[in-house]
Amino acid sequence: MVFKSFDEVIEKVKGYPERKRMAVAAAGDEHTLQAVMHARKEGIVDPLLVGDKAVIDQVLAELGETVAEENIFDYPDVKEAAEFAVKLVKDGKADFLMKGKLDTSVILKAVVNKENGLGLGRTMSHFTMFEVPTYHKILCPVDGGMVTYPTLEQKKDIINNTVETLIAMGYDCPKVGVLACVEKVNPKMPETVEARELKEMNERGEIKNCIVEGPISYDCAVDKEIAEFKGFHSEVAGDVDVLIAPNIHAGNIMGKMLACTCKAKMAGFIVGAKCPIVLTSRGSSAEEKYLAIVVSAAAAK
Image (cartoon, rainbow, N blue to C red; front, side, top):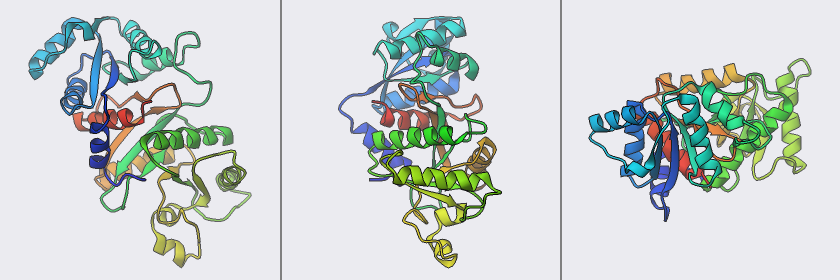
């Protein structure tokens, strides 16, 4: 299966027999709590709010919402709030994690702590889903927010992180395109060389549960007619699910282009840890944070 829209993801998560438990670190933020309360109202999550209780209570009152006292944990210091939210997941009391009003570095430091964190000993990466009006299904360009200049092994981890997330959501065999500006290997373009190596890893069974094509240009990946005109034949062409960017700049530009110019809806979070980590920027809208919660709930074990 694949998802064609976020509405399909929302309906799937609403159909789960139990709500997912979400720990929110430094939860005293209006947009964050709007998204959290929306997801709770939809029957998707049960929130555990960690942070300055006085601030959380004030924001909840302004929103006309209430949360049971036993589900609010008073940790005014953001570092302690992040550490306690991580502990809730580690202790099995929460299924996934969300960043509230604190710097990304603070929550990630708690996540990667070797003794008490949520790391798996591999590269963590940024997972995004875009509902693009001109494409026939959800598109996942990665990584535009976490790994700056990924090595070959890190690209392998990014593919595995992304594919495992989609499989957890119900996908059967995601189609992965490793992007370059051309479709042929050129020794002077290391991006094309690594793309072919990743495809060969997939063919050898080192990258599982997906189909990897590369190098492949963006136009061939998303438009089958263009691929056929160029003589590029692949079952990924025109039907790609995942787009692997050569570096963070390409991934970030691609994502912002889809969101700003193509008016795509977006959801993003961190993968490669023991649970999804909703890590939207402070400027993200309540809708974007809500969709990130929905997709994380769909991917959380």
